[in-house]
Length: 141
Image (cartoon, rainbow, N blue to C red; front, side, top):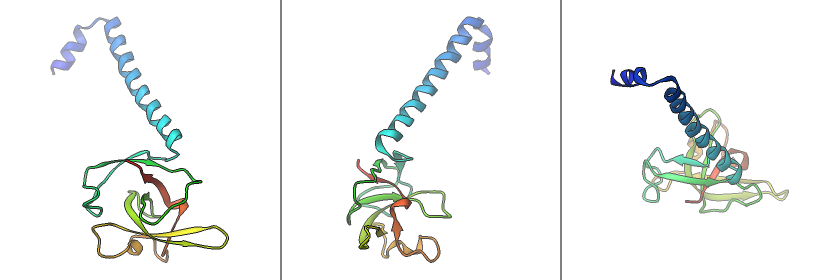
């Protein structure tokens, strides 16, 4: 209730100034986010670890900085963030196997460091490998 009292006591010029300041802060944050998307090549340059499947490397609540440069090959041992068809939340896991075809197509298998089995149970039905199109980004920091 005190907030509304403060707003009523402001003259119009002060109120416009406060609204303009708020709009500048929001637009600056959006510009920084969009700039990070362009620089990193990732649709989501910063993600939060939501589960304990990558412990002890990453704990629940850790922030990861991602890049996704398409000309950089994926290697076994790298930590990738990927989206699976039918799931809204991206998954952070380590690449454990690479399958490269003669035509250059790369498929890979992932697993959480704290999990007993690989991620084939998490992929969409009938999918045994991930492809580059499934990758949101690779953990860089």
